[in-house]
Image (cartoon, rainbow over all chains, first blue to last red; front, side):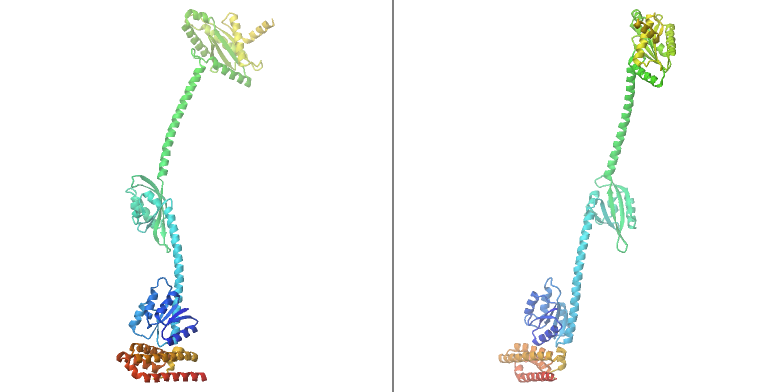
Length: 472
Length: 116
């Protein structure tokens, strides 16, 4: 150890120096208080051994000065003295003296006192080290605490801690935003009063009590009216905070604000409702449009005067029926009929009567055929009847039946007759197409007209005749 | 009253004769210088200076076991403080004789130890 010895008695100084050097210590010495004070200020000593009575600064004053030095490591102070009064010693102790060495000197006592000083200084060292470690640990704790605090304060979810009385301890920034209250305002406030309103207070009380009984609670929903008058929908979760003995110190509560989500859901629901209504309207309009289209199509395919299918329609239908007949190997027949002397009738009875005749004629034809047969107005006073599945014989029978019906009908103005031309597509015969069939029927009709009207002619008769004529 | 109390010398310095020699030698110088100072104080009538020297001789004398000289210094301290420098002047011959005795005793002791 480094020891400063301040003693103006040279004999005592010599003894102390010899003894201490014998123990392996380093000794600096001087014989006045002033000199000792200068050495203390400039050097670092583990122990100062000083005489009480010295010129200028005495031992007690020197100790007091040394103790008043700020920030110095501990120096053990032994006062050498012949004084044995209790009061003087108490004063010395009060001024920072650690121990006394009574004159006349006792070598063994000196050695013993030094050992005691060494123990105290070792403990002092140990304490210093512990303090260093403690300060370091405190530093770590402070850093960890600050990090936790920053983390807690910055959490995007409103988070609150409360004590065993349900009083708010910590309140992060998200909580400030959600509840519109700053930390100073809510510090130590009753959590129930802050998060609940009249309607939800009962629930909030139960929530806090359950948390403080050690229950972990997840996502319990509660709404409240905030101080700005806006309703907030919040889900609350909580878990207890415990000390190292497992005792509950309070709880952490997180509050998830669902208001915006709820509002969005509400808007979405409203928009969906509007969309559903629009959809229903669209469907209705679509159905109406389809019906209108169907009516239009019907009108487009219908002869305005007679209500029969028109020329355009039966052309399309005939094409389809002819294709089907060919595909299935079945016959089909086309009957054309023309009202005899219709122009003359018109000239005689006028157009309105002519139109009426056409309407009545059409109704008569329609009433005499099968449901699958198609009756249409071919144009003017000419009509067509398509007979699916009808061979030549059947077709001729139908045409004859129609001719007789027309002839027998009680027409209001005068008797009416019609001429008929029939053609048939048979599986084994020539593969006529639709327009060829109509053309053949037309030729047969022409032949009926030529032969004196009011009769039925099949194209097969005309073909032979036509072929004969052509050959001739 | 002993000229030199060996028990005190052993208490202060242990059993090492070499250490005794060094300490007694230093005491001899200190006391001789002190005596010179006392003579000057007497000549100058300086009671305060004399008290300071007497106090020093008392302390170091007690440390080495120079019982007779130390107690004489102690008595003189009281006397000078009470009566002034005259008290010292009267006792100077006695004090000188006591100083000689301790010096002789020291020399004998060291010689004995050297012989042993």
